Length: 256
Image (tube, rainbow, N blue to C red; front, side):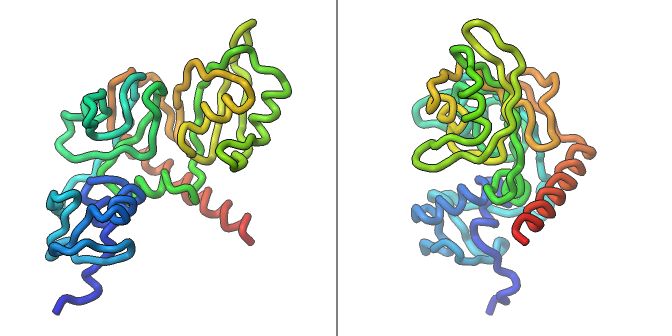
């Protein structure tokens, strides 16, 4: 009989195999797309990744103990969707990293018309650390809005606006350039709701003409060109871990 110690939650196994992030794996389980030894499972069920047969959407997954972990920074161009395949034939970010000998998945999202930094990995724990709502990893964007922003609108964006029935968290915003018919802003968010900046701007009568993510936590896009990728450097990985510890300490202090 198998020892219980050998079993871990199936969503973690899926993430560690590079199929998806842990949050996406949970969605797949809830949709009934995951089986263990031929039986559909429920969220929270466990399995032995090296002995049980685990399938996702009918495809068996394997977990290699010696598999290399990849941590990729991609400059996503406009016009690409943040997914690894698309039945409609749209351009996917998978095309931009197809020379990496591993199955990667995106950490978070950028919508089709947005551009800039997108992290990709096959490490589920890393993805969860950065993208889980409870961690509050900051994301920094360069945003061009039309028409020119007013002081009243700027105050509303900074303090929070209601989108889809819920108030957004306060944001850090500074004006980079102000012209007659447009304004360039730098916006720092600590939450990542779907198309959040576009919806925030729309709610106060502004059009988002361009949106580019230039940083995630301590990581900066720098001069990486659109469509190109690079692996994160050791010092960047250390900075992420240090940043995560700092956020955890801050969150614990706020809860006390």
